[in-house]
Image (cartoon, rainbow, N blue to C red; front, side):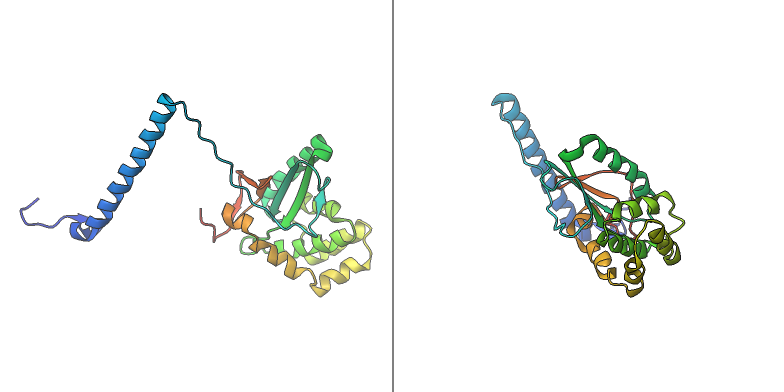
Length: 219
């Protein structure tokens, strides 16, 4: 380097980045000191550090469920009927329900990512209409069995085949459940998880899985 020439870091001069570098080094030293102290305490004093995991709570009133609410384990899934990863997760949730029975309470929450899946919002609305007639899970299974049939005419046909009366058709036509299907996207669970589906929480703790990610995801 020629004497007197300024140093550039990421396109900025050293003077411009000096404080940022200094702050980073200070933070690194503090973190290292904390780590060293924790290691010394564990080795010398046999200190055990334990923290309760962060858990979320959800308002699941009116949501489709399987299993008793009093079960010791509650599994909440935020899902999208057009998401391929949600489809892959559906059989696993059914296996959980079959294996653990009354020990698990499964809650399905709507999280249609319309920017990725154009039929997801209408499918979510249809499932909520079906839930009013006690037919949520049969329609849930139908839609995940064949994700190519999520258009309005397909949904109405499936409703008829499942024995739902004319209220199902009128419910879809009147868009009465569209607000709820959209509103559940604003629950803090998926927001914290990173705006993806399926977002699964067991007793309030997020479960990592392969997911469809919203274009607005933070990760």
